[in-house]
Image (cartoon, rainbow, N blue to C red):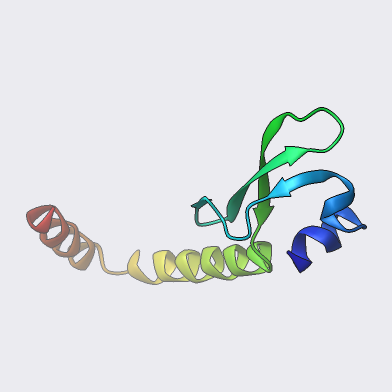
Length: 89
């Protein structure tokens, strides 16, 4: 809840009458909580981005790019690797 309150800039209970204590769904980039707006009573999904997602994704893409540039020097190895992956799939 601390992350939600940090993003809102105020305690969550000033905006929501209810908020699930743990996420109802999760994804690679964030989590989703179920909330009820205090003002209207409307049920809403509160999406919270995981901390450091941008940094993590940036590093992952950098590594993948470097690996791709390295593997470009070995086209036969790429063909063999893809063949193995397709057999397992």
